[in-house]
Length: 417
Image (cartoon, rainbow, N blue to C red):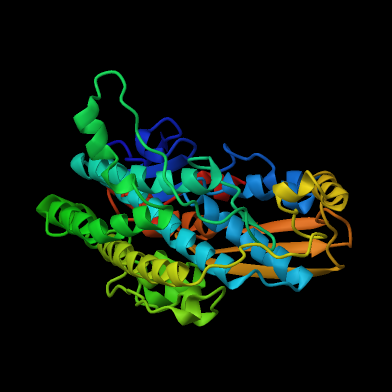
């Protein structure tokens, strides 16, 4: 009788569930995985090296392109580190705007996650539901920055500009008649805050719809329950953070444990799992939808009542208002110097981390006193999660690899950098 050997197959990078650039070499015993070996680097763009050759304020755009599903959160970790080295703190209104957009970004990220995770394991409808809500929030990005994804809205010393007083409206065109256009513009009659408030009032009902589709769905539970179990002790040893760590039952959230900006002034709960499997991580992220919505509502109330500056007045660090440049020579010089040379940071090193939608995202900057970093190191949460792939997939079936990739919420921009 001939010996039965394990065989090796390539999973990705062309597999639709490999999210574009993951190549995984799987050693199989029949349908059961004996070893999973992820090969990364197919999206390596040298971000950390590129940043060393540009002034600090010209590298914010690179941060957007790391985890390209959580754009403003990446910027936040970077500008917080710069502000720590400079010893400055942005105005209170700017801090509330940052927190509000961090939570909008968290919802954006989780909407894409639930849509693609559902699609990967065979639930088509949730993808369409999630992208319906994503469109509304992407319009908020566009309203403050002009861009739907890569915003570059957070700046050292504050944010690029205050929240607009009006929203862009749909126009009658093609097959879209007056009646449909008027219906689409119903919630766009006021300011951006009015538009976001309308969204936060509708969104809990949308999350209920997602749960109706998935939470007690027999097939969904069969695909996720007891898949990719990680114990609390092992989750800490593997360097997990964010929903991956909280899904294993450890209540660790930087917004609570190491508060930054104004999170210590806001009320929210930290959801945690019990079993540490893919289903618990799904439930944790579903509850994060609701808690982020709650935080946004608190920020809206504060921002309505407290007008003020959104950028520091120190023009050695922040650009002057564009209106001043027409009449004031000094403002013109400051603006020119700011966008050509940038500003110098004092010698030293700093690390700042934020509670990114995927976990702990941090930037470590070493400054030699110049206008560009001597070294930048990005601590990407997905890197630690992907490194646990072998441990989480061993002993499961081939189809479960797709569920495990989904539950890790992998985006390769931040992993390959």
